[in-house]
Image 1 (cartoon, one colour):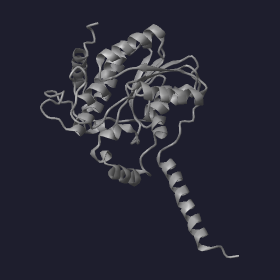
Image 2 (cartoon, one colour):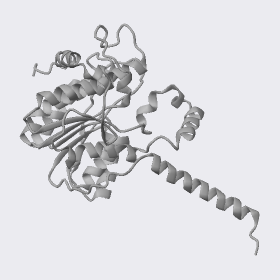
Image 3 (tube, one colour):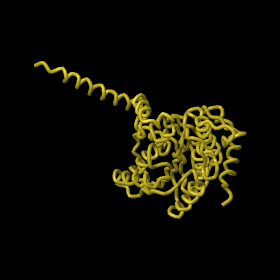
Length: 323
């Protein structure tokens, strides 16, 4: 019996769509398959209400860790937390206010965390902003530098005592391959004289790498490791400030054109999860992971003098020792 032509078109359509999803899944990379449990381990994930951070928090909760979701938007955080608790059947998942654009908020978060916990085994510095209009943190620091670097610099340093007391412990800094186009503007770190969103973002991601390398050196012998990771190009809310995404038609066109090649947040979270839990990294510190492979960094990122200069400026701008 000969089947009608619409049936063949329908079958062809299903095959093409199915093949597209399979190809997208392949391009996005492998899932991290290690099932190691983290029972009784205490974890902080910044920016955990959406995107990569949400998927990292979900995975670590599934591993039975006690997860603190450090977020700016408490409504979104609570919605994410509820979903994660239901899926993981892990009641030890908490929402805590932490606005990285406010050093006061960071200090309040750390104070509350230490009142509730005396250990910290994994800190995932994931939250970030990208290519936003020129704006500033509460302290007057250019927003991308202030959130992506300064906020996490302060948070990490204020938590070092509990991280050291919980060793072996890990710090994971989510960076980007964009650091390779970055340069620390020694004469205009705050982009006051000249602000270009892409350059400011690249500078902040370069700062992540310099911070990672300098901190690793300072943490030698403590049992605390710190590594940076580039998760790949991932479709998350971080792109919300790009001009084309502010237009509905433009957003639809870009999403359709790049659908096959840009990772889902779940796939983008896999390298971060790897950096947080894989046993092969037990004694590895100060490296840059591109997905799950140790990769070379830019020449700018290897400049130890700039790293030390940036550390000193970061201490001053965050008033780290004025507590």
